[in-house]
Length: 307
Image (tube, rainbow, N blue to C red; front, top):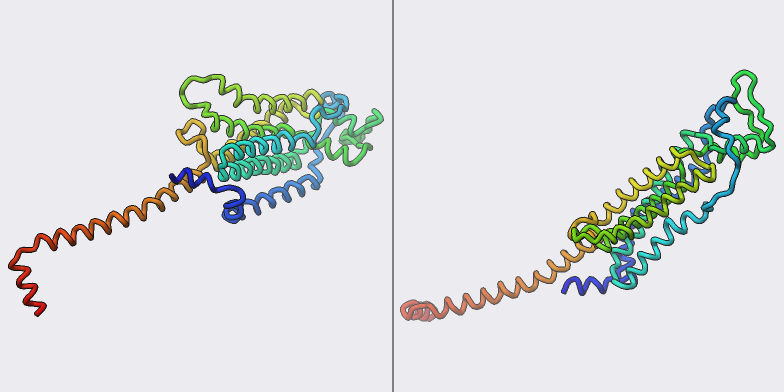
């Protein structure tokens, strides 16, 4: 009965209440977005780049196989569409809210960590030479042999942000969270041996891996950059998912913690009136039985006391 009533908790009826309950989570989420924006304005550390180091930094300048604006589309918007479709089918408000909140936290925490490391490390990209010397004429300090760049400042600034890969970390943060989500919904680890379910789970991870590989192919990152970025994203996605959902291999792994918590509360509330009514009936019946068990002598004594 309680689970039927819980299905009536929709975005329209209980959405505002749920948002008020998690208002602090949403405020911190906005704060993370502001912090990440500030990190992108900071000038990264300019690591020493000598003449002898240019061998691994002279790869050609190429465009992005996966544009920057495409990353939030496949890593955030696409998973949110899947969350919404499931809500329309099952009407689980708590699943929708926590899935959206979880993936946003996964991506933004990953973004803050990634951009903070980028600024602190300042590793040159594989195509740094052409960012620094767009005309192909290299200029070095005669004493330190450090580069003296004469390219566009914004292009040079971006050239010092190789480690770790933002595309890779964002991809694994969003699609990694989606992989966790799907594994719980299809009960991939129900111990029934349906290995085909793993194909659905691995598909988002494969897409994230292909994006990471494209960053090496485009000469925007070294392989260490994408490996570290992907690892950061996947670890953060795992923490964020398990904050809101049980592990997929658990019996209740298909739903969020909040769903079962609310369901238990509704069951307790529905059982309380029944228990009270039962106790009242017992008291009444006990009173009648006690009255009927009185002996005639006691009844006479009670009559005399009243008179």
